Image (cartoon, rainbow, N blue to C red; front, side, top):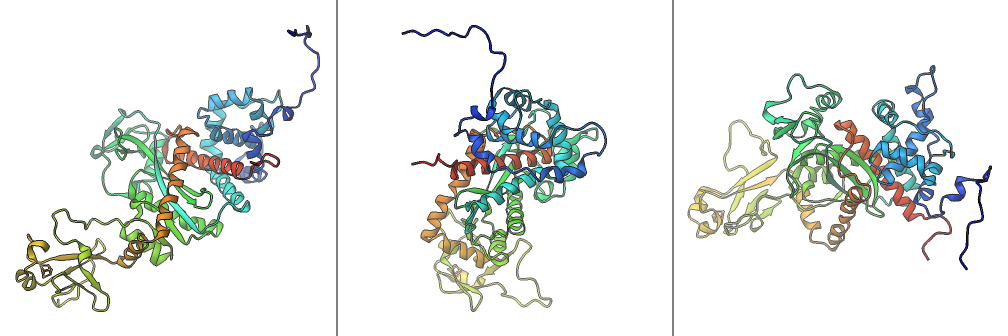
Length: 457
Ligand code: SF4
């Protein structure tokens, strides 16, 4: 039988609790169990005046930001509208039906002011790491590191050639931040190479052609993750060059130990992290196994003997060539002793000209030079260790596990929609990357530790 509504008039009073209308399996319900903002008022106290009109509750703004980053709502204006209309969002923000919403411009003021000055977003991110550790999601046996390019919020045509530099009239917050980080090893100090172009809107963003697409301005987000459950244990914003990403890796490993006492036995990464100095730092300074391909440019394409055809004699500190002759680092005695390694950190081992001139293998060894030369890094021990690890079964497992960090970046861009920044300057990138990493950790906990009664069968 076809039914018909019998209510002809609106009721005068309703009995309504938002709590009853938020589904038990809603993502925010699950996330809410892991969000403890009880300490933020105390943390922010020195940054608020003790007089004047009361501000918007910072906890409300942080809860709204968590919603924005967890649900992929990138516009602050839209976030305010969504929280206004969505009951689950209101519930998460502890807002009643008639609870007032802050204006979207309030976000901007607080982000650039108090939240940034107090380093609040870093504190919140670390809170999620501590909670993941408390939930038993961090094993700390193996870490993986990688970086991903995120487009800067700039117009590509508002730029000048790199060699021209910024015009003196350039001004603004992003320009001030650019000047501040000029000597920082994670930004301006990462490489002496001039960028091809400098953007006038956000000069610290890097013009990069690292992907297969056309070049664009970007920052890099660097993740250090624990391999057990792909929890992000640290995050760092850098300019988009390899040297800066290696600097970020070192900073993150040191900070993770300092803050959380986590020290990995092995580090998994791609060739970008396989330079001799970095492998030396990991193995010699930190005692971490490098599950990293060695960055080695000694390969030959002309069919002549590769470096691997020369055997190193540890006791004699010399190489033995396929012709059975010795290559030594010091064939001559100088009056003033010279350093063994050059400034690039490599020691040159040379065969004697006499041996090579008389050698029958010369055409297959060094057809164009008078004598063969082999370069050995001062960190060759660490490189050899990485080469040996690369032949083991454990390395094959590490290589598969490396995908976990790549999947986090894919999730960041596709689900959380952070493929382009909304904030400018190194601090804007830092804020966004902290919030996004925090959102990913919260979502991870919600998934790995489901609500009681909602566990998968
Ligand atoms: S050319 Fe020189 S280095 Fe090469 S195999 Fe002959 S002797 Fe050895």
